[in-house]
Length: 239
Image (cartoon, rainbow, N blue to C red):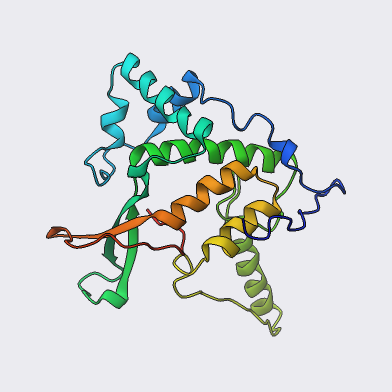
């Protein structure tokens, strides 16, 4: 593990994040949670590399759906991902309509549907701990449960309006990081960050394995590309 003993984040209460705050995160996925997850999924989403869609799983009879739940719970018990979960499809989507340049594409990822389900449910459990113990900074408005970028955007607009009305100068700093999602290093950007929040080691290792052992194949309008699947350790999958 990278920087296994990294200093844990100090919380508003004055204490530091601890792994025991996540007690129960390793419990089995409950039948009700599993059923609600599939019931909430958006219809008509893309299939994974094996042709499975969220609609396919959601339409299963209750007994078969629950059998999948029991199978997925083996991931937590064993500390191992399913081999198929390491296979990822890379779909280059044009940023500008009509521009076919590879430099003007956004790489969307297609990952195994059941992998998305497992990690989505685990993410909800983590976020509950982060919310209960106020682990995230209040300035973190994007990608946070109940958060919205509307407030900082409105603050910016109001500051500009006041400066215009009062004939004042206003200094604004903004940045758009090129390839921000693609350049997140898997151990410094993700592994160490989760460890600082005291996320249990068993889950950090599961997440890290997805980066260490993933195998990517490019998918275009002509189908799945031929050749060896290649590893892409860095980056946060979009899609």
